[in-house]
Image (cartoon, rainbow, N blue to C red):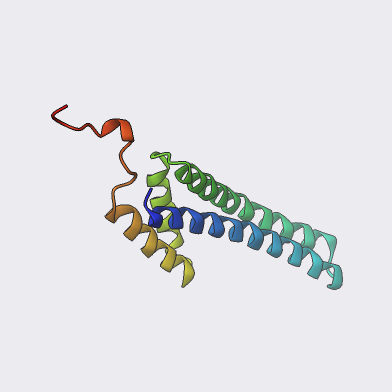
Length: 126
């Protein structure tokens, strides 16, 4: 496996972990802020419900990105298109997501996916 492929997989793992951490931080921060703000319980429940509805797809995206990166690190070729797709989704996260997308596309589309297995290399003439 090319060193750039490993770096892409590790960067996607780090971005997925950062996404999980950011979701947890926002959820806990809003809940903590409501302990100081004197609002009705209904408003608190509505805001927390909206946050929960928004957190579900974002959590699924982070989990998918994490799984795809781990599978690609274990040299599963089926994870390569998923990493390219998650890299394209990261394009919207300026500026670091854009850098991840450019590097992902450069590394995964410019170089063959994996080294050929040793059994596939046949020497002729013997």
